[in-house]
Image (cartoon, rainbow, N blue to C red; front, side, top):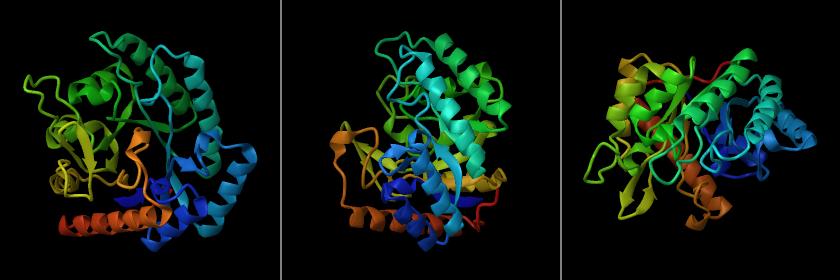
Amino acid sequence: MYLTGFADEASQDLAIQIRVTKALGWNAIESRGVWGRNIHDLEEDDFERACALLDEAGVHVNCFGSTIANWAKTVDDPFEITLAEVERAIPRMQRLGTKLIRIMSYARLPGEDQRPQERFARLREIQARFADAGLTPVHENCMNYGGLSWRHTLELVENVPGLKLVFDTGNPGITPDPEKSDGATQDPVEFYRNVREHVAYVHIKDARLQGAEEIYSYPGEGAGRIPEILGLLAADGYDGGISIEPHMASVFHNPDAGAASEEESIAIYETYGQRMMALLKDAGITPKLFAR
């Protein structure tokens, strides 16, 4: 396994993202926000400046944390929006030597009709375009169709040939389980056990519900059952990436949650990374540096 993370949760300044990554002893970033824009939406000169900074520092982008088909978009939006993001991302991933890109399956719709066939058709095209370029999209169980339950995720896999998953430890514990009439949330371990054979990447987030409020915490302190999942990953021989996504200084899908100062954000990110390394040590896992 190797360690990486959404370093934009420390700062939108790429130089600071690189600094905190190296302070943790890591050599990879899951790149999402850079100077206020997603990496696939940067102006060309800003993207080249980012490449130069990364090359000089010897830090790699192991995954694009894209906005493709994410919770801010619905299947009613023109598909051309999605395809334009895909076509912008591909050459930038190739320029950086990045093989993975996080995608989703569009926002949940109100009511029972989630238009699954339209989602499947769109994801098949997304999957095909990246695969044709030798790249791997990984679907995250977030506030999207696949995140409704492990059953919905498996439905995606069955209907989108070749689709791989990024399993997020924190999302099940704050998401109602549609199979439970008492409003109980999903079980992260149950979710992982049912999708494990399709998992190519892992996000570490931890959270719990306090009433209707999502409370994010350091790994091992929420409902994510992270130590147990790390044990399962080790037993499964998982050798991919572990990417931290603290959500403690800011929550990207909730602008009303407020944000910490940059100094606080950096401290939270570094502490989160250190605690993640301690959990891996407790699980008998010695992470490696990322290698292309």
